[in-house]
Image 1 (tube, rainbow, N blue to C red):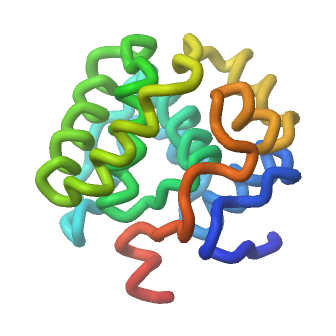
Image 2: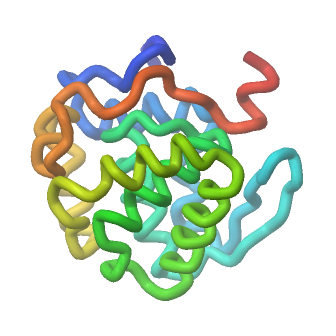
Length: 174
């Protein structure tokens, strides 16, 4: 698996599948968690297990693509930014469980990292709404280039952010 610089969003010429796989690898995530009945999350070094109902199993796939498209990291600030961006793009397409996760991530961001979260709020107001999630739609975008997917969402072809920040587990080893 090719490694990419963390100093900028993933390159727009990658396929969405390649970009997703690079994102998963650099964060030490995998696709097995997409379909698990429960998942262990790490929130600032505190690990806990949460249920992974069908609505989240589909939503987490899109959530990862949103990270890939925008360039927002997987550290607490990045998760707050992506939650805020998703909120502004229309979380009504997701089930209540997922909506509550997104809302709590955004609210945490306004406390933890208010400037970055406010910037994500402003950035999320323009562009296309989130599509109704489905496996058919999800699988159909994996063959696009990342630049094409960004343009479909009304994002700059190069992504939104600068350096990608990694989740707590990976960041302490890098």
